[in-house]
Length: 453
Image 1 (cartoon, one colour):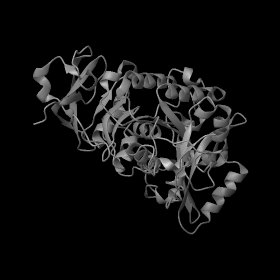
Image 2 (cartoon, one colour):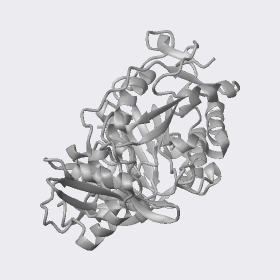
Image 3 (cartoon, one colour):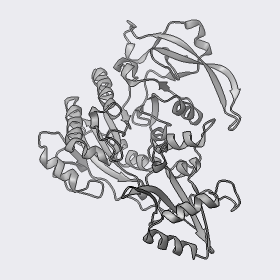
Image 4 (tube, one colour):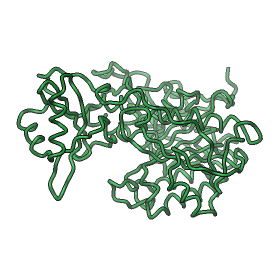
Protein backbone atom coordinates (compact mmCIF):
# COMPACT_ATOMS: atom_id res chain seq x y z
CA UNK A 1 0.00 0.00 0.00
CA UNK A 2 1.29 3.43 -0.94
CA UNK A 3 1.92 5.52 2.19
CA UNK A 4 0.96 8.81 0.55
CA UNK A 5 -1.20 8.95 -2.59
CA UNK A 6 -1.26 12.14 -4.57
CA UNK A 7 -4.63 12.34 -6.25
CA UNK A 8 -5.55 14.57 -9.16
CA UNK A 9 -8.92 14.66 -10.86
CA UNK A 10 -8.60 14.10 -14.60
CA UNK A 11 -10.17 17.38 -15.60
CA UNK A 12 -11.60 20.47 -14.04
CA UNK A 13 -13.13 23.77 -15.04
CA UNK A 14 -11.73 26.14 -12.44
CA UNK A 15 -12.60 26.98 -9.75
CA UNK A 16 -14.03 23.48 -9.58
CA UNK A 17 -12.60 20.04 -10.26
CA UNK A 18 -14.70 17.86 -12.50
CA UNK A 19 -15.02 14.28 -11.37
CA UNK A 20 -15.53 11.51 -13.87
CA UNK A 21 -18.11 8.91 -13.01
CA UNK A 22 -17.06 5.39 -13.82
CA UNK A 23 -20.11 4.73 -15.95
CA UNK A 24 -21.23 6.35 -19.20
CA UNK A 25 -22.32 5.75 -22.76
CA UNK A 26 -20.00 4.48 -25.45
CA UNK A 27 -19.24 6.83 -28.30
CA UNK A 28 -21.12 5.64 -31.38
CA UNK A 29 -18.15 6.05 -33.72
CA UNK A 30 -15.25 4.80 -31.63
CA UNK A 31 -16.77 2.53 -29.02
CA UNK A 32 -14.73 4.38 -26.39
CA UNK A 33 -16.36 4.88 -23.01
CA UNK A 34 -17.41 8.53 -22.65
CA UNK A 35 -17.86 9.40 -18.95
CA UNK A 36 -20.41 11.86 -17.68
CA UNK A 37 -18.98 14.62 -15.55
CA UNK A 38 -20.02 16.32 -12.32
CA UNK A 39 -18.26 19.32 -10.73
CA UNK A 40 -16.58 18.88 -7.36
CA UNK A 41 -15.14 21.92 -5.53
CA UNK A 42 -11.52 21.84 -4.40
CA UNK A 43 -9.71 23.71 -1.71
CA UNK A 44 -6.61 25.55 -2.96
CA UNK A 45 -5.88 26.83 0.55
CA UNK A 46 -4.74 23.49 1.96
CA UNK A 47 -2.41 23.81 4.92
CA UNK A 48 -0.82 20.46 4.11
CA UNK A 49 2.99 20.45 4.17
CA UNK A 50 2.69 18.67 0.82
CA UNK A 51 0.39 21.31 -0.68
CA UNK A 52 2.57 21.45 -3.78
CA UNK A 53 1.54 17.95 -4.80
CA UNK A 54 -1.90 17.43 -3.30
CA UNK A 55 -5.37 18.73 -4.03
CA UNK A 56 -7.81 18.69 -1.12
CA UNK A 57 -11.19 17.44 -2.35
CA UNK A 58 -14.04 18.79 -0.28
CA UNK A 59 -16.25 15.73 -0.86
CA UNK A 60 -14.07 12.75 0.13
CA UNK A 61 -17.07 10.39 0.05
CA UNK A 62 -16.99 10.39 -3.76
CA UNK A 63 -13.24 9.77 -3.97
CA UNK A 64 -13.72 6.15 -4.98
CA UNK A 65 -15.99 7.23 -7.84
CA UNK A 66 -13.36 9.45 -9.40
CA UNK A 67 -10.92 8.47 -12.08
CA UNK A 68 -7.64 9.43 -10.43
CA UNK A 69 -4.04 9.78 -11.42
CA UNK A 70 -1.86 8.31 -8.66
CA UNK A 71 1.63 9.73 -8.33
CA UNK A 72 4.06 7.69 -6.25
CA UNK A 73 5.93 9.87 -3.77
CA UNK A 74 9.18 9.31 -5.64
CA UNK A 75 10.40 8.08 -9.01
CA UNK A 76 13.79 7.29 -10.51
CA UNK A 77 14.25 10.26 -12.83
CA UNK A 78 17.24 8.62 -14.52
CA UNK A 79 14.95 6.00 -16.02
CA UNK A 80 11.69 7.93 -16.37
CA UNK A 81 11.97 11.72 -16.17
CA UNK A 82 8.61 13.17 -15.17
CA UNK A 83 6.95 15.83 -17.30
CA UNK A 84 4.34 18.55 -16.79
CA UNK A 85 2.75 19.29 -20.17
CA UNK A 86 1.25 22.79 -20.47
CA UNK A 87 -0.94 23.86 -23.41
CA UNK A 88 -1.14 20.12 -23.95
CA UNK A 89 -3.69 20.09 -26.76
CA UNK A 90 -4.45 16.52 -27.80
CA UNK A 91 -1.21 15.18 -26.33
CA UNK A 92 1.22 14.81 -29.21
CA UNK A 93 4.03 16.20 -27.05
CA UNK A 94 3.23 13.45 -24.57
CA UNK A 95 3.23 10.84 -27.33
CA UNK A 96 6.65 12.02 -28.51
CA UNK A 97 8.20 12.16 -25.04
CA UNK A 98 6.85 8.83 -23.87
CA UNK A 99 8.22 7.17 -26.99
CA UNK A 100 11.64 8.10 -25.65
CA UNK A 101 11.18 7.09 -22.02
CA UNK A 102 9.64 10.14 -20.33
CA UNK A 103 6.54 9.97 -18.14
CA UNK A 104 3.90 12.70 -18.34
CA UNK A 105 2.32 13.12 -14.90
CA UNK A 106 0.48 16.42 -15.42
CA UNK A 107 -1.22 18.06 -18.41
CA UNK A 108 -3.21 21.25 -18.82
CA UNK A 109 -5.21 22.85 -21.60
CA UNK A 110 -8.32 25.02 -21.74
CA UNK A 111 -10.13 23.23 -24.61
CA UNK A 112 -12.68 20.55 -23.56
CA UNK A 113 -12.68 18.98 -27.05
CA UNK A 114 -8.92 18.51 -26.89
CA UNK A 115 -9.26 17.09 -23.38
CA UNK A 116 -11.73 14.51 -24.66
CA UNK A 117 -9.40 13.48 -27.47
CA UNK A 118 -6.44 13.39 -25.07
CA UNK A 119 -8.27 11.14 -22.63
CA UNK A 120 -9.21 8.74 -25.44
CA UNK A 121 -5.56 8.28 -26.41
CA UNK A 122 -3.76 8.20 -23.06
CA UNK A 123 -4.42 6.25 -19.91
CA UNK A 124 -4.13 7.33 -17.22
CA UNK A 125 -4.90 10.87 -18.36
CA UNK A 126 -3.57 13.44 -15.85
CA UNK A 127 -5.38 16.25 -17.69
CA UNK A 128 -6.55 19.45 -16.01
CA UNK A 129 -9.00 21.23 -18.30
CA UNK A 130 -9.04 24.88 -17.33
CA UNK A 131 -7.46 28.29 -17.71
CA UNK A 132 -3.76 28.33 -16.81
CA UNK A 133 -4.38 31.70 -15.17
CA UNK A 134 -6.03 29.80 -12.31
CA UNK A 135 -3.20 27.31 -11.81
CA UNK A 136 -0.65 27.81 -9.06
CA UNK A 137 2.81 26.41 -8.64
CA UNK A 138 1.50 24.39 -5.70
CA UNK A 139 -0.85 22.53 -8.09
CA UNK A 140 2.03 21.05 -10.08
CA UNK A 141 3.64 17.77 -8.99
CA UNK A 142 7.41 17.32 -8.83
CA UNK A 143 8.74 16.99 -12.39
CA UNK A 144 12.07 17.08 -14.19
CA UNK A 145 10.73 18.75 -17.35
CA UNK A 146 7.96 21.25 -18.15
CA UNK A 147 6.82 21.78 -21.74
CA UNK A 148 4.80 24.64 -23.20
CA UNK A 149 3.50 24.68 -26.77
CA UNK A 150 1.80 27.98 -26.09
CA UNK A 151 -0.65 29.64 -28.56
CA UNK A 152 0.93 31.00 -31.72
CA UNK A 153 -1.95 33.24 -32.80
CA UNK A 154 -0.28 36.53 -31.87
CA UNK A 155 3.18 35.46 -33.08
CA UNK A 156 2.42 33.86 -36.44
CA UNK A 157 3.01 35.76 -39.65
CA UNK A 158 -0.54 34.71 -40.57
CA UNK A 159 -1.86 36.15 -37.29
CA UNK A 160 -2.32 39.64 -35.91
CA UNK A 161 1.33 39.98 -34.74
CA UNK A 162 0.27 41.42 -31.40
CA UNK A 163 3.13 39.41 -29.93
CA UNK A 164 3.31 38.48 -26.27
CA UNK A 165 1.09 41.46 -25.50
CA UNK A 166 -1.72 39.63 -27.30
CA UNK A 167 -4.49 37.92 -25.40
CA UNK A 168 -3.57 34.42 -26.62
CA UNK A 169 0.21 34.15 -27.01
CA UNK A 170 0.55 36.37 -23.96
CA UNK A 171 -0.43 33.46 -21.70
CA UNK A 172 3.21 32.41 -21.87
CA UNK A 173 3.68 34.80 -18.96
CA UNK A 174 1.26 32.66 -16.93
CA UNK A 175 3.35 29.56 -17.61
CA UNK A 176 6.47 31.38 -16.43
CA UNK A 177 4.57 32.52 -13.35
CA UNK A 178 3.64 28.92 -12.50
CA UNK A 179 7.28 27.83 -12.86
CA UNK A 180 8.36 30.73 -10.63
CA UNK A 181 5.78 29.76 -8.00
CA UNK A 182 7.19 26.23 -7.88
CA UNK A 183 10.24 27.76 -6.20
CA UNK A 184 12.98 25.23 -5.40
CA UNK A 185 10.80 22.49 -6.90
CA UNK A 186 10.95 24.03 -10.36
CA UNK A 187 11.87 21.54 -13.11
CA UNK A 188 15.46 21.04 -14.20
CA UNK A 189 14.45 21.63 -17.81
CA UNK A 190 11.87 23.65 -19.75
CA UNK A 191 10.91 23.18 -23.40
CA UNK A 192 9.07 25.94 -25.29
CA UNK A 193 7.72 25.38 -28.81
CA UNK A 194 6.18 27.85 -31.23
CA UNK A 195 6.23 29.18 -34.78
CA UNK A 196 9.33 30.74 -36.33
CA UNK A 197 7.52 34.09 -36.16
CA UNK A 198 8.32 34.10 -32.45
CA UNK A 199 11.87 35.08 -33.42
CA UNK A 200 10.79 38.27 -35.20
CA UNK A 201 7.80 39.23 -33.06
CA UNK A 202 8.16 42.82 -31.87
CA UNK A 203 11.47 43.01 -33.76
CA UNK A 204 12.92 40.20 -31.65
CA UNK A 205 12.02 41.73 -28.31
CA UNK A 206 9.50 39.01 -27.42
CA UNK A 207 11.99 36.17 -27.64
CA UNK A 208 14.63 38.30 -25.89
CA UNK A 209 12.30 39.06 -22.97
CA UNK A 210 11.27 35.39 -22.74
CA UNK A 211 14.85 34.22 -22.48
CA UNK A 212 15.61 36.98 -19.97
CA UNK A 213 12.71 35.75 -17.84
CA UNK A 214 13.99 32.18 -18.00
CA UNK A 215 17.47 33.42 -17.05
CA UNK A 216 15.97 35.14 -14.00
CA UNK A 217 14.46 31.79 -13.02
CA UNK A 218 17.93 30.24 -13.06
CA UNK A 219 17.92 28.70 -16.54
CA UNK A 220 20.42 28.92 -19.38
CA UNK A 221 18.74 28.78 -22.78
CA UNK A 222 19.33 27.26 -26.20
CA UNK A 223 17.47 28.20 -29.40
CA UNK A 224 16.84 25.68 -32.17
CA UNK A 225 14.74 25.40 -35.29
CA UNK A 226 13.46 22.07 -36.62
CA UNK A 227 11.28 21.34 -39.65
CA UNK A 228 8.87 18.41 -39.77
CA UNK A 229 9.87 17.72 -43.39
CA UNK A 230 13.00 16.03 -42.03
CA UNK A 231 10.69 13.34 -40.67
CA UNK A 232 7.35 13.44 -42.54
CA UNK A 233 6.12 14.96 -45.85
CA UNK A 234 5.01 18.21 -44.20
CA UNK A 235 6.74 21.58 -44.28
CA UNK A 236 6.41 22.74 -40.67
CA UNK A 237 9.34 24.78 -39.34
CA UNK A 238 9.18 25.38 -35.61
CA UNK A 239 11.27 27.22 -33.03
CA UNK A 240 12.28 25.54 -29.78
CA UNK A 241 13.81 27.03 -26.66
CA UNK A 242 15.46 24.49 -24.37
CA UNK A 243 16.08 25.91 -20.92
CA UNK A 244 18.18 24.00 -18.39
CA UNK A 245 19.12 24.84 -14.84
CA UNK A 246 22.56 26.30 -14.42
CA UNK A 247 25.19 23.72 -13.64
CA UNK A 248 24.11 21.36 -16.44
CA UNK A 249 26.17 23.09 -19.12
CA UNK A 250 29.82 24.00 -19.64
CA UNK A 251 31.12 26.98 -21.56
CA UNK A 252 32.86 26.71 -24.92
CA UNK A 253 32.73 28.36 -28.31
CA UNK A 254 29.44 28.21 -30.21
CA UNK A 255 29.22 27.39 -33.91
CA UNK A 256 26.16 27.56 -36.20
CA UNK A 257 24.61 24.28 -37.35
CA UNK A 258 21.65 22.99 -39.35
CA UNK A 259 19.41 23.36 -36.29
CA UNK A 260 20.68 26.86 -35.49
CA UNK A 261 20.49 29.14 -38.54
CA UNK A 262 22.47 32.34 -38.88
CA UNK A 263 19.82 34.49 -37.22
CA UNK A 264 20.28 32.50 -33.99
CA UNK A 265 24.00 33.26 -34.02
CA UNK A 266 23.27 36.93 -34.80
CA UNK A 267 20.71 37.10 -32.00
CA UNK A 268 23.18 35.66 -29.50
CA UNK A 269 25.91 38.12 -30.56
CA UNK A 270 23.45 40.99 -30.27
CA UNK A 271 22.45 40.05 -26.72
CA UNK A 272 25.54 39.24 -24.67
CA UNK A 273 23.52 40.03 -21.55
CA UNK A 274 21.50 36.84 -22.03
CA UNK A 275 22.64 33.49 -20.68
CA UNK A 276 22.60 31.40 -23.87
CA UNK A 277 24.24 28.05 -24.49
CA UNK A 278 23.95 25.27 -27.08
CA UNK A 279 24.67 21.57 -27.16
CA UNK A 280 26.19 19.61 -30.02
CA UNK A 281 23.60 17.47 -31.78
CA UNK A 282 23.80 14.73 -34.44
CA UNK A 283 22.84 15.37 -38.05
CA UNK A 284 19.13 15.48 -38.69
CA UNK A 285 17.66 12.39 -40.37
CA UNK A 286 16.29 12.34 -43.88
CA UNK A 287 12.68 11.31 -44.04
CA UNK A 288 11.96 7.93 -45.64
CA UNK A 289 8.54 9.29 -46.61
CA UNK A 290 9.08 12.07 -49.13
CA UNK A 291 5.68 12.50 -50.78
CA UNK A 292 2.10 13.01 -49.62
CA UNK A 293 1.22 10.13 -51.98
CA UNK A 294 2.56 7.85 -49.27
CA UNK A 295 0.18 9.10 -46.57
CA UNK A 296 -3.06 10.02 -48.37
CA UNK A 297 -6.22 8.06 -47.78
CA UNK A 298 -7.43 6.18 -50.85
CA UNK A 299 -10.98 6.81 -52.00
CA UNK A 300 -12.87 5.34 -54.93
CA UNK A 301 -13.15 7.83 -57.84
CA UNK A 302 -16.93 7.93 -57.28
CA UNK A 303 -16.71 8.58 -53.54
CA UNK A 304 -18.71 11.57 -52.35
CA UNK A 305 -15.61 13.12 -50.77
CA UNK A 306 -14.39 14.33 -54.16
CA UNK A 307 -15.49 17.80 -55.23
CA UNK A 308 -18.29 17.97 -57.74
CA UNK A 309 -17.76 19.21 -61.29
CA UNK A 310 -18.76 22.79 -60.51
CA UNK A 311 -16.38 23.16 -57.60
CA UNK A 312 -13.52 21.42 -59.39
CA UNK A 313 -13.98 23.64 -62.45
CA UNK A 314 -13.73 26.70 -60.19
CA UNK A 315 -10.50 25.27 -58.78
CA UNK A 316 -9.06 24.78 -62.28
CA UNK A 317 -10.07 28.24 -63.45
CA UNK A 318 -8.31 29.88 -60.52
CA UNK A 319 -4.91 28.31 -61.29
CA UNK A 320 -2.15 30.53 -62.63
CA UNK A 321 -0.26 29.49 -65.74
CA UNK A 322 2.56 27.88 -63.77
CA UNK A 323 0.12 25.98 -61.56
CA UNK A 324 -1.88 24.82 -64.60
CA UNK A 325 1.32 23.44 -66.14
CA UNK A 326 2.17 21.73 -62.87
CA UNK A 327 -1.23 20.03 -62.84
CA UNK A 328 -0.94 19.05 -66.52
CA UNK A 329 2.27 17.16 -65.77
CA UNK A 330 0.55 15.33 -62.93
CA UNK A 331 -2.34 14.44 -65.21
CA UNK A 332 0.02 12.89 -67.75
CA UNK A 333 1.45 10.48 -65.20
CA UNK A 334 0.73 6.80 -65.84
CA UNK A 335 0.24 6.26 -62.09
CA UNK A 336 -1.75 8.21 -59.54
CA UNK A 337 0.21 11.10 -58.05
CA UNK A 338 -0.79 13.56 -55.36
CA UNK A 339 -0.09 17.14 -54.37
CA UNK A 340 -1.54 19.59 -51.89
CA UNK A 341 -3.02 22.99 -52.61
CA UNK A 342 -3.83 26.12 -50.63
CA UNK A 343 -6.18 28.95 -51.44
CA UNK A 344 -4.33 32.26 -51.53
CA UNK A 345 -5.25 35.87 -52.21
CA UNK A 346 -3.18 37.34 -55.03
CA UNK A 347 -3.79 40.94 -56.08
CA UNK A 348 -7.13 40.87 -54.29
CA UNK A 349 -8.28 37.66 -56.02
CA UNK A 350 -8.68 34.23 -54.37
CA UNK A 351 -6.69 31.61 -56.25
CA UNK A 352 -5.50 28.04 -55.70
CA UNK A 353 -1.81 27.17 -55.74
CA UNK A 354 -0.41 23.63 -56.01
CA UNK A 355 2.81 22.76 -54.21
CA UNK A 356 5.57 21.58 -56.52
CA UNK A 357 7.54 19.59 -53.93
CA UNK A 358 4.94 16.87 -53.21
CA UNK A 359 4.95 17.90 -49.55
CA UNK A 360 2.05 19.07 -47.51
CA UNK A 361 2.05 22.68 -46.51
CA UNK A 362 2.10 23.48 -42.81
CA UNK A 363 -1.04 22.11 -41.18
CA UNK A 364 -3.06 24.82 -39.52
CA UNK A 365 -6.05 25.19 -37.24
CA UNK A 366 -8.51 24.77 -40.11
CA UNK A 367 -11.41 27.12 -39.50
CA UNK A 368 -11.14 29.65 -42.29
CA UNK A 369 -11.16 28.68 -45.98
CA UNK A 370 -7.61 29.91 -46.57
CA UNK A 371 -6.24 27.63 -43.87
CA UNK A 372 -7.82 24.47 -45.27
CA UNK A 373 -5.61 22.31 -47.44
CA UNK A 374 -6.83 20.41 -50.50
CA UNK A 375 -5.51 17.15 -51.93
CA UNK A 376 -5.12 16.90 -55.70
CA UNK A 377 -5.08 13.39 -57.20
CA UNK A 378 -4.13 13.05 -60.85
CA UNK A 379 -2.85 10.55 -63.40
CA UNK A 380 -3.99 8.62 -66.44
CA UNK A 381 -5.56 11.81 -67.79
CA UNK A 382 -7.78 12.16 -64.70
CA UNK A 383 -8.03 14.88 -62.05
CA UNK A 384 -9.82 14.78 -58.70
CA UNK A 385 -9.76 17.30 -55.84
CA UNK A 386 -10.98 17.07 -52.22
CA UNK A 387 -10.29 18.46 -48.78
CA UNK A 388 -7.54 16.84 -46.73
CA UNK A 389 -8.95 14.56 -44.02
CA UNK A 390 -8.36 14.53 -40.28
CA UNK A 391 -6.73 11.10 -40.61
CA UNK A 392 -4.22 12.59 -43.07
CA UNK A 393 -3.56 15.38 -40.58
CA UNK A 394 -2.72 12.73 -37.99
CA UNK A 395 -0.38 10.92 -40.38
CA UNK A 396 1.40 14.16 -41.28
CA UNK A 397 1.89 14.87 -37.58
CA UNK A 398 3.54 11.48 -37.14
CA UNK A 399 0.57 9.96 -35.27
CA UNK A 400 -1.06 7.68 -37.87
CA UNK A 401 -3.11 5.64 -35.39
CA UNK A 402 -4.29 8.57 -33.29
CA UNK A 403 -7.88 8.19 -32.09
CA UNK A 404 -10.42 10.95 -32.76
CA UNK A 405 -13.55 9.79 -30.94
CA UNK A 406 -16.83 11.64 -31.13
CA UNK A 407 -15.48 14.72 -32.93
CA UNK A 408 -16.28 16.12 -36.35
CA UNK A 409 -13.78 16.27 -39.19
CA UNK A 410 -13.34 19.99 -38.67
CA UNK A 411 -12.79 19.57 -34.91
CA UNK A 412 -10.23 16.84 -35.54
CA UNK A 413 -8.35 18.94 -38.07
CA UNK A 414 -8.40 21.98 -35.82
CA UNK A 415 -7.00 19.98 -32.90
CA UNK A 416 -4.27 18.30 -34.95
CA UNK A 417 -3.37 21.44 -36.86
CA UNK A 418 -2.69 23.05 -33.49
CA UNK A 419 -0.37 20.23 -32.39
CA UNK A 420 3.30 19.31 -32.74
CA UNK A 421 4.88 16.82 -35.13
CA UNK A 422 5.61 13.75 -33.02
CA UNK A 423 8.93 12.58 -34.55
CA UNK A 424 10.37 16.10 -34.32
CA UNK A 425 9.85 16.24 -30.55
CA UNK A 426 10.94 12.59 -30.18
CA UNK A 427 14.22 13.36 -31.92
CA UNK A 428 14.78 16.38 -29.69
CA UNK A 429 13.95 14.34 -26.61
CA UNK A 430 16.24 11.48 -27.53
CA UNK A 431 19.26 13.54 -28.54
CA UNK A 432 18.95 16.57 -26.27
CA UNK A 433 16.50 16.33 -23.38
CA UNK A 434 17.33 12.85 -22.11
CA UNK A 435 21.10 13.44 -21.94
CA UNK A 436 20.53 16.90 -20.50
CA UNK A 437 18.32 15.71 -17.67
CA UNK A 438 20.23 12.53 -17.01
CA UNK A 439 23.73 13.96 -16.56
CA UNK A 440 25.33 16.99 -14.99
CA UNK A 441 28.34 19.04 -15.97
CA UNK A 442 31.73 17.41 -15.64
CA UNK A 443 30.88 14.25 -17.56
CA UNK A 444 31.05 13.25 -21.21
CA UNK A 445 27.65 14.74 -22.04
CA UNK A 446 28.43 18.24 -20.85
CA UNK A 447 31.76 18.19 -22.63
CA UNK A 448 29.70 18.66 -25.79
CA UNK A 449 27.76 21.65 -24.46
CA UNK A 450 28.89 24.84 -26.14
CA UNK A 451 28.66 28.41 -24.96
CA UNK A 452 27.66 31.32 -27.19
CA UNK A 453 30.56 33.64 -27.54
